[in-house]
Length: 333
Image 1 (cartoon, one colour):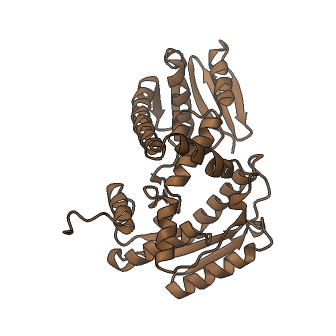
Image 2 (cartoon, one colour):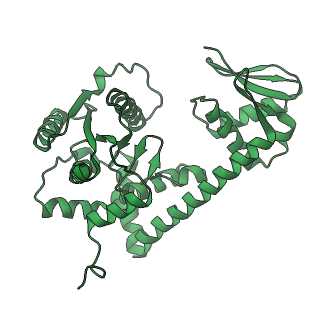
Image 3 (tube, one colour):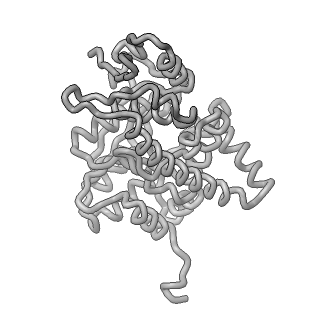
């Protein structure tokens, strides 16, 4: 079999995906989220293989959530692995981060928020261009079903993106089984998190019960779920562009006061679907970091519809001010 016709191996597949999405560039500093599990261990080895070729500066970061009595062993494993690969290593426990208030009622969401804080703090310390996470195709499918069950919008159903802000996900095109097979073939060790099999977590029930059942019903499901997510991401990109263009027709930017001002009459003339997207776009532009739930957005729309001009507190740090048919966001810092 000549080189042109031989099957693409795992590393080739990832290289193709990375190049297609322009995820990794020469001379970059990349922070790697390293749990010690198979996915992140594989990601570390993959980036180490490409380090010399692309002149990459690599840093590995491990956060111990302290959920298990054995979690300290994971940190030691990661530390030794990075020592052997000559990759700088940083670690912390969740109790030492100084995060005193929870942002949600979900233990998993609180853990994600803590990881984000930890990774982004280290990225700033090291001047990292990207934070690489080891989510793969199976994670993508699981996320889709989690959000489907929770009644997500098109934006939510688009699931995990190859690149989002500073975060990159080089492994999204490959499966967990491919990763495990590669690690076995190359005799590379990793740690096992026993909570990954616990039925207490929705993701695990979807992973071990729902998706296998669906694939058993139709063997094409694995490929077609991925295809559906690709279609949703294309739709979301189109809607994002449309929202940006539509926002320019209902709002203007005041350069002196540095704020976006919305014409309420023009806003209310929009389709309700577009109204939600326009509000999220507006809040994003103004860097208002609040959970944009549908009830929260409906509250703002009801305020817009009230005839009198006044202020409306959407948070103790943020108010919406309405005057003469126009409105803008005022910071209370």
